[in-house]
Image (cartoon, rainbow, N blue to C red):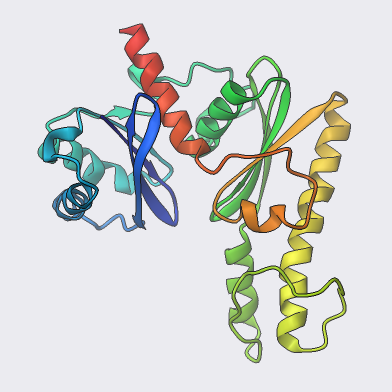
Length: 260
């Protein structure tokens, strides 16, 4: 089976795939100091708990936006799975799409993986919105070329900044506000409304501007853990694909095998 590793700024996601289907998924907080041995002990236990044998992993592919985390993930692959990992965007696992931007090397691996997966799943021009540490908007045209996008502060990052900077504001959970009013009657209600509806307005407004600039029909694909939370109160998303980044890694692996 294939072990796909998506190392993001907040979490590292490990997914075990068989014939392109996700059989198991785990996540751990991103910490560049975590050693390959620590990953190995933790992951072998989880694989066993899911009922898979220790030698079930035959291939590994890694995509990361945290360069300092890469070495220890490579150690994990080499030492504990006896596999030289493929690196997303490099060698046999090259992107295979046109990065039509001024600085292609600066585009995060997660964003390229998202548009690769989204284009494989949906035809036409696309906007991919990913709710991660940052909220990103990525544009891929009908030919599969990455055309650029937008980076905005993630909703958790925005909330942390608000609570940190304002001494009297409480820590709140990110959730849909109760009721339809946008006039809060308590401090917590006002914070929920500002964070939630503020993000909905931001997403809808930026997506509308992107669509107007493209000038053709555009489908909006959302991914990331909070996509389903916002899906409740906006018609913006045409599709929600929770595992786009992992699917992108699986596609790169499949292409590398065909090339070989």
